[in-house]
Image 1 (cartoon, rainbow, N blue to C red):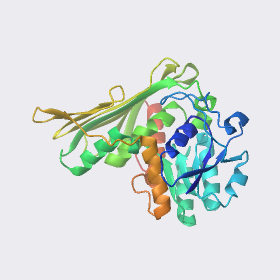
Image 2 (cartoon, rainbow, N blue to C red):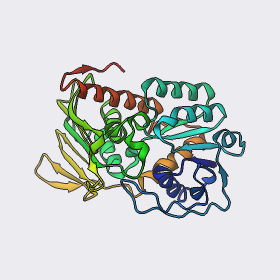
Image 3 (cartoon, rainbow, N blue to C red):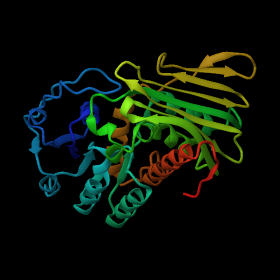
Length: 338
């Protein structure tokens, strides 16, 4: 299967690394307007996770500086969109109409209406659209989801998802809310999406927080109000520039025990109601590689992306935007009608 990676920034480099480990997936083309990057030299790229940038061998890869020309290439089966968020919807729609399968980095779009349009267009064209909500494929989160779905631990009683990092100094567009949606939207949509996957869409949302983007602060604590789960909290954001380290974590309390994860230690601890302790076995595959491998498999077999359906990625966009609206209302509970 021949794939084009569109956009050679931080996420593009992460996807390029992942593609190297997927049997049957061929990097056929890349797109950028940066001539240095088109040589394969991504050594200057930085991000909030992963190691330093790398140099890739693009000697057998077609280089495009124009997206319409790339989409007109009939040898390309799928397009992996790693562009700034404001370009996701228009590029995805054009790719679907050109007969390509589409993987698009999170967030799916800047608005719920645009996300819905992408889903509708994929259905009309008969092509696969998948949002790259990689948290669904990160081992610690996959293990949590499998444990909750099994029913072994009973009802969820409380859940907290937290994600924090420095305001990005590596990509200027991320600091422009008109291009990225802002820090909370770009960062915490991962955790909002996990709530959609694990618990569905809440009945209502409330939130408080603080935003001072010029000084690199964009923080929120949001409560998702469900009928059958007393407490679901999503919190975090940008905490000043450069120095603040990236972290992600969760605590989920069930009748049978408490699950706790932190990226600082990387394992999932399990504290059972019986008083015993243990840990969850984790899948070994890297999250980005698992995500790309799943996308490729769905494209090749014609299966729907049931592990990461675009309808749920669209719901995550709408729910995250509602969370931001709730923050502006400073704690007022807003009904969720998405």
